[in-house]
Length: 75
Image 1: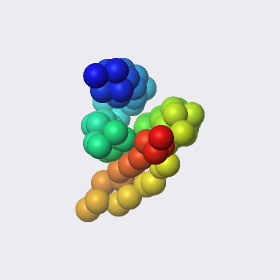
Image 2: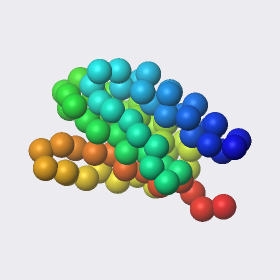
Image 3: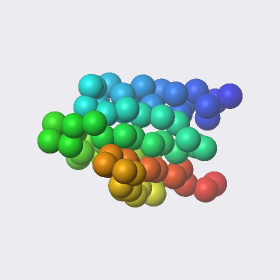
Image 4: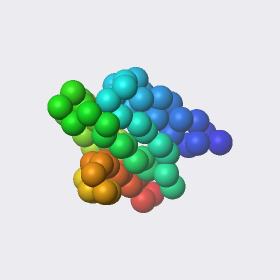
């Protein structure tokens, strides 16, 4: 329950950072962040947040959408 709560807190923080310029979802202990407006999206803040958590981070192109995908570190 503790790690689930931590994920929700982090997800809420990312949602606050990206505002209306993207969407964030928790996926298997990591996150998927869909970029709606690449010119206004806070790229540095989102990457820094995920990397400071020790996540591995990728950027994918899904159709016309950029998606930031993160994977939590394995303990």
